[in-house]
Length: 44
Image 1 (spheres, rainbow, N blue to C red):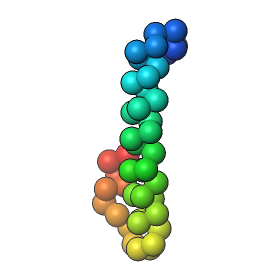
Image 2 (image 1 turned 60 degrees about the horizontal axis):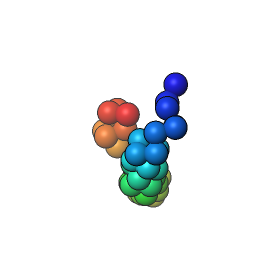
Image 3 (image 1 turned 180 degrees about the vertical axis):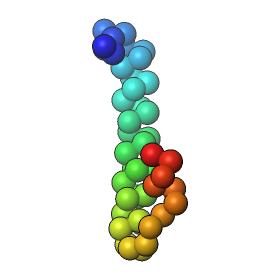
Image 4 (image 1 turned 45 degrees about the horizontal axis):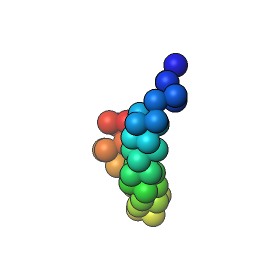
């Protein structure tokens, strides 16, 4: 399990998620707009 009692780790996790969400969101939006298969999808 992830130890959320460590405030430093919890803070780093929140920052990482906050940075990743817009990147993943824009990736899916751009991919949906194009309507063409993107080779980068295979890396996930």
